[in-house]
Length: 72
Image (cartoon, rainbow, N blue to C red; front, side):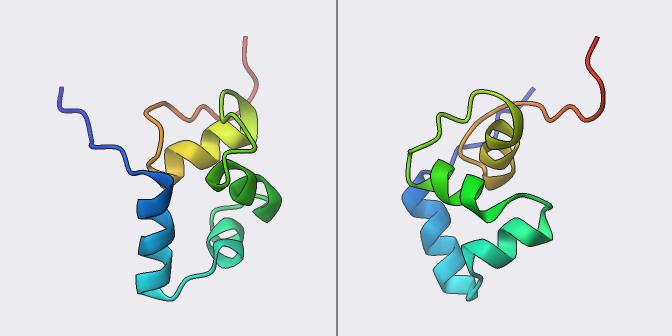
């Protein structure tokens, strides 16, 4: 199994800038609260569980699996 190279927070911000995408728009397009994405990118949220985990995985700054729905 090949592991995808993780991005740094700076890489993500540079990608957004080069594509002309705001963090707020990206957040809304992915169904995430902008405050959570800002928190993850500014290292104010640990991105261990829940919505912040999902944001970090989608941003490409963390390896992980996104599991939707009820957990048993």
